[in-house]
Length: 443
Image 1 (cartoon, rainbow, N blue to C red):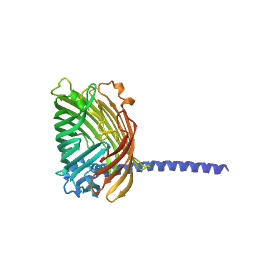
Image 2 (spheres, rainbow, N blue to C red):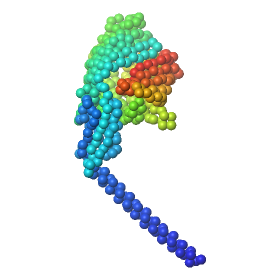
Image 3 (cartoon, one colour):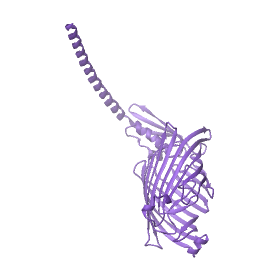
Image 4 (tube, rainbow, N blue to C red):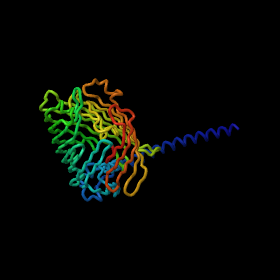
């Protein structure tokens, strides 16, 4: 019996020593293989990058958005990221690719299906008491380098016209630029000490902007412009305070920092966008009263797989010089901030805004993707000249919720038809809600 116990003990001890040796050898082999694989991957050099399917778009411009470069070590993760970067340009119906190994070199092939880039633009939007129409013609891939050249006409109470050219990033460069020439006409609320009136507002604008790209997702914008404003009384209340047209000549300086890491796949969006911006306005007729503003905006998009829902949210906080003046910078409006609230309900010197949407694909047909949406819009407006403590109070709050339908047109690239119905949860001066329709996602 003792002999059997000793034999069993020595057998177990020998087995344990053997397992330790095997484990040690396994670790050594694993590390050696990892080193060999890494060395092998590092030895692959990108020999060439070829684009298939491009007729208009310039290959030199597309390379600006790729991390993979000819003559550098090939990286699979960078290659996959490059394909998504090209999709995010929103210029192609589809983007795919492959990489082929030949000895110690890699050949990259990127295949795209181009959209039609010259097309008319039509926007029809509105709600119960307001209507907006915009017509235009633009080329969103001018000369195959991602530039936009266009003209548009808008009717929103009155007529406006704008000519614009935008080249966000030039081929092989970190720089881009934008130029705008416009004439705008609307009917705007004016705020006096004891009354609110309406005025015919005309704006003549000439502006230019430069872009500098720190990386593919991050850029700085800085620019300036000159604009001439004219206010003429429209209703009785405004005529009592504004006997003659008010003329103002202004210069604008602006700077912003944007980090945009959103990924696009048809109507679905994931990722985030951050932007910080600041403006300075100098008025020739009122040199002692310059205007400053600062704005922070965050947009977040993510998929909720269990619900098969795309969550989209926007948070924006904007603050300007808190001075009483006839024309204030921030507006509660059904087209830009709060759906269902009405047409330019109120203006103020600070605005906090939250928009949330739950988007779910309902059906796919050959010509469109149908999407259902549930949403909530909440805003707080600070009245001019009031203390900061009055900003986030019930009297400054506008809260609305609703549901709607989106139709993403697959035959007309990147065109989304939108119809929403909104209900007022809490409002100070806004409407009780109603239908809102337009073109494009709200944000």
